[in-house]
Structures are given as C-alpha cells and as structure tokens.
Image 1 (tube, rainbow, N blue to C red):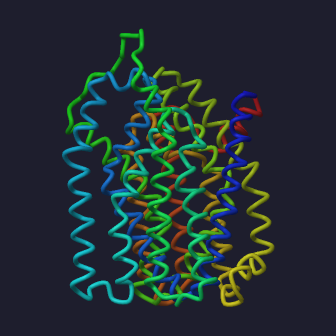
Image 2 (image 1 turned 45 degrees about the vertical axis):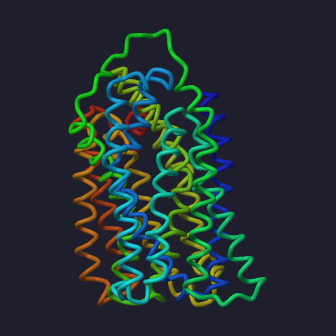
Length: 438
C-alpha cells in the first residue's frame, strides 16, 4: 500500500500543479480577452473535445488496457495489437484528416459557424495534433507512467496558453477571436510534441522481446470486435465530456457567448471538488485492468474500495469550502462572474454524488463491461440534454446546473447497480461502511 500512496503523492503534486496552471490559464484568458472572446473559444473547445473522442474510436483506451494487461514487452506481440494499429492506420487516420480538412474548408468558405467561425477553424486545424497526443498519453498510462500521461495536455498546454496570452497582452495585440485562436493552436502543437517526446522510453520497452511466450487471450478477436469495444470505450469517455460540455454548447445555441463563459467557469470550478478523483483514476485504471485480467474479484473490490475512500475523504472538505466561499471563488475571474456562484454550488453537488457512489463507470469499463458503461452514460446524457432544452430557456445558467445534477444522480446510481450485478463488487462508499461494521 505504501508504494501506491507514494505514487499517488507524486501524482497529486503534479496534478495540483496542473489544476493551478489551468486556473491561472482561465484567469489570464478571461482577463486578457474578456468574457465574450473567451466564450467564442469555449464553444470551439467543446466541439474539439467531442470530435477527438469520436475520431479516436476509443482505440487509445484499448491500447492502454492491453499494455497494462499483458505488459509493454508482450502486448506488441499479440494479434490484438496488430489489429488495433491496422484500424488506426486505415480508419482513424484518414477519417481524422478528412474531418480536419473538410471542417476547416467549410469554415473558410461559408458562414455556417456564425460568431464562432474563427475559433472553430482553429479547432478543426488542430484536430490531428490532439489525436496524436491522445494516443501518446494512452501509451504512457498503459505503461503506468501516469505523470507522463498528463504532462502534455495538463502541464505544457496551459503553460503555453498562459505564455500566449501574456505575449498578446504585453504586445498590445488586438484581443480578437483570431488572436485567441492562434494562442490555442500554438499551445496544442506544443503539447503534442511534449507528449511524443515523453513516450520514447515506453516505445523502447515495447521493442524489447520478452522470454514469456505464453500470451493468454492475446489472439485478435478480429478488427470488427476490437472496433466495437473501442467504440464503447469512446462512448464512455464521450459521455463524461458531453456531461461537461453539453451545457456550454446548448447555452451557446440557446443564449450567447456571455452566458457560455459563465456556465463554463461555474462547471470547471465545481470540478475542483473532484480534484483527487482524476488523480486516483489515473493511478488505478491499469490496476483495475490487471485485476480483471487475473479474474481476481477480491483484488478488484479492494481497489475500488480504496478509490472510493480516497474520493470521499478528499472531496468533502473541498465541497464544503467551495459551497461556503462560492462568491469569492467565482469573483476571482472578474466581478461579472459572481452571479454564477449558486450555479457553481449546484454543479458541486453533482460532483459530490459521483464521489459518494464511486468509480462505477471505470470498474465496468476495465472489467470488460464497457458496453454497459456506455449505455448508462448515454442515458445520463439524454436526461441532461432534455432537461437543458427545457430549463435553459426558462432558468438560464441555473437551469444548466440543475440538469447536470439530475444527470449525475442517474449516472451514479445506475453505474453502482450494474457493477454489483455484472462484476460482483460494490464501488460506492456503502461498501466501506458495510465492511467497517463487520
């Protein structure tokens, strides 16, 4: 347990740095460019996040799971590995390039993007770079190099965004949609290069031959089966990103850039309540895959019990702090953001629900139940989408927050139920309470 806690401590320090940088990045962007221009970029960021998850087809998650399951030196010798990279080469890559080029051309030749046209152009141009970064970070995570798996996107990217904003401010450049888009593309390319440099060691490990010639379950089930598994993984990830961005997108459509910025800041600040969740999930994902590969239900239960205990112990103090000081926290981004304090409080409750009910989605996904996880997440998104359509026109930002809370309640409860039914373990805090009473 102590080696794991040491790794978590190291990861926590890096993750805290990443959170701090993202916080500073958001302040710099809002202060330098203003809420309207930052709202234009926020909309494009949401579109880009969805596109990357869809275009990757979840194959980066399959790669990560296989590397964790078989080992870095064995996984490349399996039939599964060959099939995965065949799909990347002949499906993912050409489709991504077509979408990138086609989207950019559409933004350049039509006015379909409306006020978001320039930032959407940048998001289409940078799509291939972000896809490369996603696969590189998946390889790092599979080899249990957790810090390296977040370094490009969560350290280098915000640093470059901050530097770009500083250059524009010091150079007295016009704070336009074009300026913020240049900053975004520059940061995206830099973070991709950093992620590629960090997997050199992992690639060297994969080139080494292993004396272990028995690769259980390493035969390829066929590219179609792997693609379907990847799509379910993609839907799981898409569900979480949709949950984070659907409010932003629908507010952008039903309201305007000013409210988009308010929703984005309120929801992002609320995610601080789950600060440790992201850290713990990164550390435990390969461990969950490994336990499932060994068919060790007791070990799997021990892992999820440790996860949910750390979720709650770290999440509740942050939740209480954000609830009490909501106005002061939102005011850091500017006086116009204080009005979003109550919306932020409701978003915080949604995060707390997911912490208490535990890592149900991850437990399903890494126990070969990714199809079940994806269906639950899509149900959650459907609930949020319908409620957003009803509540945003009537209640604005508060409507977004309540829609998110209802969706999070469904997600947590349904995931817990299916983990108990399909996997035989309880991922919620109730497993810890029942164990302590024995």
